[in-house]
Image (cartoon, rainbow, N blue to C red; front, side, top):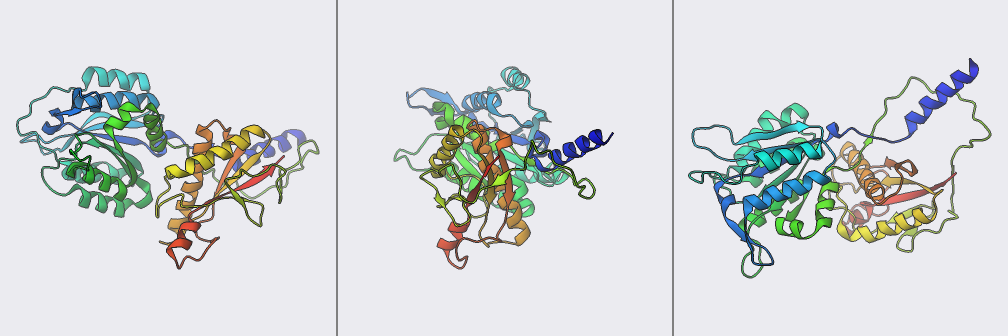
Length: 383
């Protein structure tokens, strides 16, 4: 009986400290597909082949559906005279089933539709989406807008500002631009609008043609849309002393790791590996692309040392409130963990903790100091 009780307590303890992947329902992805009249126009790829924007959109949906792993929905944005709704549900948000979604897109996503009075109501669609969908889930969602950015009515950038102010970190917006480039390769008004919307929504902007050309970009976007999250496990009563078996000693934190830190990282006085430089923009947890090679160095060290475990520590600057920064630091650490897992590191070798603004590495009074404080540290752990 005592052996069973100790075993049960050990099991509870294990589940209370090991990160558990959150269910996909916690952060669904809603794809907003522009099916306005202007999407029937053509655009040219590098081979000078003329492609309908709406057909490119459909192809992107098919490719993304193969890579996305979290709960997904597809709504179509359009204006139809006499119809007060500015979007319609093509696929309601549900558990992701790649084959089912691809089948629906192939059969039912129409690319040949009437053009008359088919304008682009991005702002009104976002407003209705907030009123009818986002309120019910407190904005806990990731949006992906695929469009040519040719708004017909009012300013969608102002609308996304309102939505972002309302939901903060709970909501993020990514955008994909589908249209021709200007002759001088400058951004069109539509592309500039979508770039600004993504920046305001805390996400990233992509070119549709670039996504078609490079499969790696599709994978990157899917990775950003559906990051591995860490579920919080409810506390189970008061702590109960457990007799530890001598065969299973507790993990020991090493002040000076026997495994050498990657050359691209520095080691601080605590023995932590410090991932320095500008890793994140203010108020965001998307990893900047120039940090990927450094993280790849971490992946290499971990693969060469299979017993090594890391605690990933997220830190922020002092902009915004303490609770806000605490949540942000956790998201930043989780983003790094997700990257490492996607690169083949077993999730059980990685733990995550956020320190918010409480452990600055530099003076928050300067822009340079704040940039240094938006960082991640790795604490090496050996068995």
